[in-house]
Image 1 (cartoon, rainbow, N blue to C red):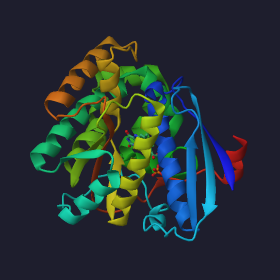
Image 2: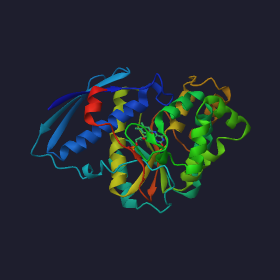
Image 3: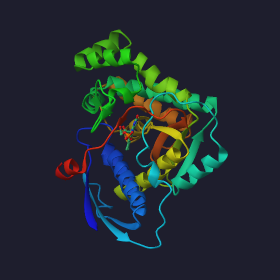
Image 4: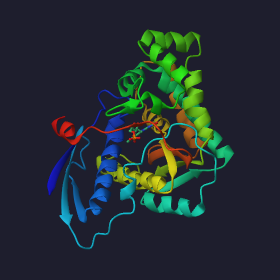
Length: 323
Ligand SMILES: Cc1cc2nc3c(=O)[nH]c(=O)nc-3n(C[C@H](O)[C@H](O)[C@H](O)COP(=O)(O)O)c2cc1C
């Protein structure tokens, strides 16, 4: 069977999709998931990235599934459906060294920089807390949040359901009301410290309450679609390996994204104060956490704990075909 997968990025209307890199990571995650799933059906998948050297908004992937006697079913295949995002606090239970080695193997050729101790986790949590002020005070991100959250639900086919956001029901009700229009958001931010409660619940507390933060990084800058898609494939293996060891995961990508904007001196918002804060945070990412945003593919927190009881589902195949 042969198929062409068309991946369209959202760089024009999503501040987080800088140069389409976040979408290209997601394409890589999709392709790796597909390859792993194919092994369960005795197939090898030959994948050709047709636009590897261009950085267009439209990337195409030719996928050929070849029945093959020598293909063994991947042990990760059974975790494709359970892999999900856990944005709520996890436990601080130590992650077994053998599991750490398995995760590092899964992430290859990417390397993994770990933040295990309370002091190390505090550094990342504090940075996330400050970074969230950028995220919550710029209208460009507000437009994205308004589009992607589905209020009042536990499951959503194509968005993030309210219950998966990681806030308590009272804060959720307040956020929903405030997010009705940008004037309300900026009023609350300016006069009523409106970002404090969500930043505490979404960034600082979860940042401390986890087993570790992990930064997956390449040896060279991730500045082509080809390299970024390959990094996405490694991320999929890492994430599925977490699920295989009953570890929860939450991506924490926005500090990397805003640091890239700041490092490349690119304007991403009309809010000067937020731009300045992003520049400051980019310095802290390097100096305090030792992370080089240009080579970093993925920042996340992982840990033992309950699986998320709310999640995004997926569009059904006919809807994907026609969209
Ligand atoms: C490239 C990429 C970046 C992401 N960044 C974040 C992030 O910074 N914070 C977060 O909470 N979730 C992040 N996510 C998770 C998505 O929001 C999540 O995958 C989506 O809501 C679907 O949920 P599921 O993975 O549980 O099915 C990211 C996902 C991808 C693929």
